[in-house]
Image 1: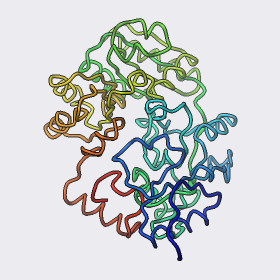
Image 2: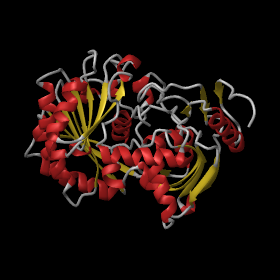
Image 3: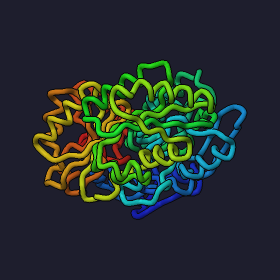
Image 4: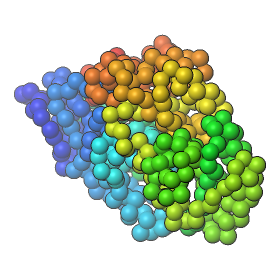
Length: 412
């Protein structure tokens, strides 16, 4: 290579050009901020970059075979475009990816499929269908040397591809730049029913959600939210209730979904009178959960994503709430908590990390000012063994350390 890496913004039209730019950056030790369309750019520690490299022009759907339930798309393909293509063929991405964009100041549907897999932030249906990484059949990426690497294929039997997919998923662009992804898709659910209970406290709500999840009724969504968050929904009866909202979803063919919904509604009478939403209002409700509508009104308030054991989640959040004011959405029956905190100097980091150390779990700061994100641990601190493993993976994929340096951890 000759000459310095060009600074600024680059969105190549070909994988080979992207690989050349990464190789040039490696040769000149120029740090790169990796991005798709930038909807998650403000998540993580601020990246100290010399240039920005985007996949937004690598946006083609390379292959789609509805009969084989396989879709292959370049990393910059808009998620909204992929989902519309699937919907036209009565199919869907089974992991129901969360759309972080609206909560971070972007319009809905602007995320790319590469960003979805790189962050592995799956939606409410994860409890039923698995996470984003579980549906990756294979991928192509450019590592930190500028080499094009490929693994996997169009079947789940390829163990090598599955392992690489797991490594890339959740790496936030720190190991390699994904350029193409093969995904397993599934038929869309024809009927959706949602049972709503009002006014349950966190502990009782999580008990009810865990009970529902343990039934044979194939529950595909379980959420509970504080009253102040429920006010943001478009469904008038939910927004105007002035109470907390607990929701359970079932899907499938109409007769099956209705039968299972009725059985669950009978079971939940012991907790609270239940409202039932049919397919249309249910789709609106769960789309609003997926877009984190309830956290869009106060963009200056930090937003955390906490993974923990479902049964201890209410105690964990109650312990945090004794120190700072919080508003919580429990998903996955409590296994995932979206937590909004006041706009204080550390975004509630001290209290949240201290409480997690007592109860167990992991927390990622999803939304906060750059000054806050640059001063605290945005991602869950790793123990020495895991940090050593992460450092060794970084060394293998990005030996010069040019891809999103410091975004997840200062050392990586």
